[in-house]
Image (cartoon, rainbow, N blue to C red):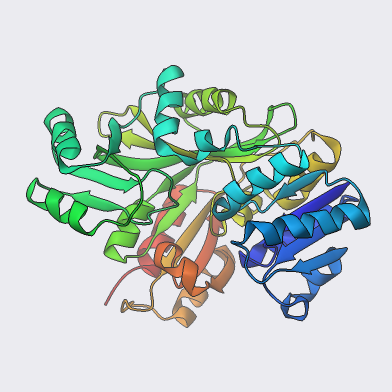
Length: 386
C-alpha cells in the first residue's frame, strides 16, 4: 500500500505519523521543500522515497512527484498531510489520480465557513448566525439582526488568520478599506467558552476514538491579544456535546480521518457550533491524546490506514493540558522553578517554531493529572506574571 505524505517534516512532530505508517507495513513516500539531508533521522528512515520540490504551492510540481511515484511504485493508495494548510492541494491530487478520500467536489464543505453553516442548519445544530459580506451595507444589515460586536474572518481561512472583531459601526468602513482581497464571512459574537469534540473515524465512518478539550480562551483571542494559551482534555465528554459531535461526523461524512469540531458553551449552558476541521487538532494535541489515555494514536491511525479499522480499548485516565508561555511576557517563576514544582506532572516541554508561536506559544508545557484542580493550579503558576 503506497502512502504519499505531503510536508512530512512540518509540523515537527508529524514524523511520528510516517514512522507509524512504515511500522504498519505501508510504503511511505514523502514530498517536501526541505533537502533530504535536513530531515530528522527517524523521518529519513521511515520514507521509502523523498521527492524534493522547489515550491509546495506549485501544484504542477506536486502532480509531477505523484506521477513519478506512480511510475516507480505503482498506484497511490492514499495521500495526506494531516495539515489544514494543504487540504485543497490534497483534494486536487486525489481527484486527478483517483485516490480515496476528500476530492474537489466536497472540499468546500470542510473549508468554507459559509458551507459549514449550511450543514449545521441541515443537521439541526445551533450555530453562530452570519453570512458572506461584500460591502459595508452587508455588515450593517447583519448588525441590525445580531448587534455589535461582530466577528469578521476569511470564509476559507485557518485558525485566527485575518480575523477581526468589529465593536461598532465606525469600524466597518475601516475594515473594508484595508481588508485583504479575499472573501469574508461575518458572524455574531458569541459570549461563551470554546469546547471541542475531537477524534478519529475508520474507513466506514465509525468513531473509534473521541475526546474533548476546553479552552481558557479561544485561539482568536490569543492571537489578537498576543497572549498565552491553555487548554485541557476532559475525562468525561458532556452528553450534549457528544451527541452534537456524532451528528456532525455523520453530516460531514467523516471517513478514515481525524476530526476537530469547535463549539461555544454559551453562558446559558447551551451549545453553539463554531466550525469543523477534518484533520487532527493543532500543536501537540495528538500527543495530549496519548498522554491522557496512555495510548499511541499515531500508531492507531496508521493501522486504520492499513486495515480499515481498529478495535481500540481506551480510557481517559488523565486530564492532559497544553500550557503556553510567550517570551514577551514577564513570568513570575523561571523554567527551573516550574520544573522543580511540577516535574512529575510535566510529560513534555518544547519550544515551538515561530510560525506556530503566536497562536500556540513560544514554549509549551504538557502536563497531566487525574484531577482538574491540579491542572488548574499548574496553569495558574506557570502563566503567573510578575
